[in-house]
Image 1 (cartoon, helix red, strand yellow):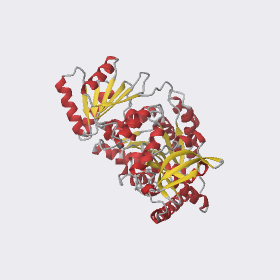
Image 2: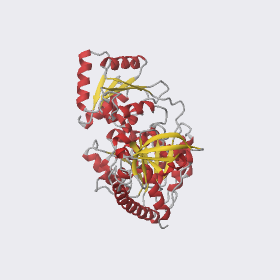
Image 3: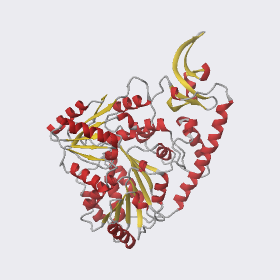
Image 4: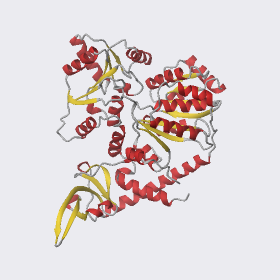
Length: 530
């Protein structure tokens, strides 16, 4: 199996690692898990040596010349959160050998899946050149360099008889949707059907509006299918997909309905693929035989990164920021209702809107009570997943239309809302969100030329050395435009790569470590039969 090569920049963005710092966990193929303690200068007789120090359990220590330190691999988690191995213990060798067998078996199964994909036959999709050019011109902006490369790669894939399996990775708001639109246009203008899957009704509704507007002049019918779809409309969509009257259907998990059939399905687009389960993605990939698949994400899960690195999927990276995009100023502070009101006052005074995001509905209720008690002079509306679907959708729409100043919600807004007037976000109890969630939330603001502000509020002691404190501190430091790639790598360090062909997120990496895992896997793939 040949690895599909990434260019150096993209490989560094996705897989680059920070330099080892004292206290990091490392793993040696023969000796197991240790703590990196840094380097020391040492005079040995007439010779001067730089020695690298590694500490094992119960004080065992290994000191090596710096040039031999490459025999250790980064493990991907702080050493103080792990149980180190004993130097010269048989326990490590037993665990290592068991995991190597499992890893090679997983890799072999994935190789077979990859071979099956290459032998499958898809419908080559070549749209009418004039119609496609008109569709592209309707974008109204010059694509960024990375968008242009991604679009070219996707169009080339779609023109082949081998089914496309491409992962499109791009930071929040960097233009992945335009790549998806052009992929959909290539298929639909060639006379075939397209499925666009989104993990939430909010994002599905946003995509439906976007696709409907862009395809308005093509004569291609766009439909929506989600839990908001009424029974009568659902039947009409089902009939339109079966007889080919509908060219593009945008939906949620409702697309997994086994009663759906398609007249000529050729392309499936999975947005925010990290939010779908492996079984759900597999179902989408097999809605028809020999279909092309385009998956998209801003924060790829570790398993997707692993599959990308070893060549199980093709990869396009959109890392060029849109023109005039500015970093979101991110601040970490104690929970403070007065600070929330001050931030909202500043934003409303410049004719903007704000988000207040809570991890749980109970938090929304408490802040709602606070705002009512303060008799605030701004308007706000509430949205969360426990509300009736129609009521939640209506609240979102009112905020999007600018009818209210503030949206008080749970994290349901992390996907799908694209509101250029909203440039301030307060995250209450921010310690209860993961890195990827916080990054997705931050992507909801900063989409205009105005400076954007994110306030992370928490009662966690930021000096207590806890995982939550470290996570929040790291997030505030990763606030530059395009930080999603660094955040995905940090998330990978925390959670591991997972098993290649299963649903276990921590999987084989939990005992081998990231660096050694990749080393063993690459060696196995190099020796696997072509």
